[in-house]
Image (cartoon, rainbow, N blue to C red):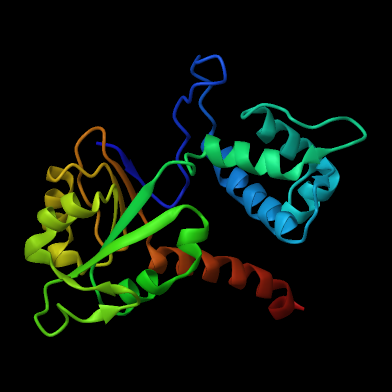
Length: 234
């Protein structure tokens, strides 16, 4: 089973320019690469063509040495005294993260969370095309969510095949999540993001990421409590 929590997974071996598989990128570096990419895209939007490692590191909230080490995993493209070409580095990081592929996303669950995800405009700009949304409630099926029409989950396999969806987001109650996940995997989807409050089981070769908002809030509460502790003891 390949089961992943909210910690980013390592990027698998990708071929370099010579066709030789590159070294696997560590999970912590993968997480930071997504931050660098966001900072670079902001610079592009502002018309900035070059950036120094110090400026990019500061915009990303890391040290320059950490930045340079992370970028070494995808190849170093900086020039001493000149910095990085923003567009080129952005494109290269996106390729290393797999964002240059055609990712088509289907959302199962058209409740408040599912509808919010379907309407989120940031997916398309980052390479993700939401192509379908499903629900089992007859009162919901057929309704429009953004530009999508809610499909009956009974037609899950047919719609996944028709739309070419290769990623599925599960915004479902715990009681039905495993059964739907099994159907998604049987339909050939190998990338699943689950918001369901339950541990799902998937076969080897399927990437499952779980977003547990309750756990994240508990961790946040812990850090907030520690931050307040000095004030309470003063």
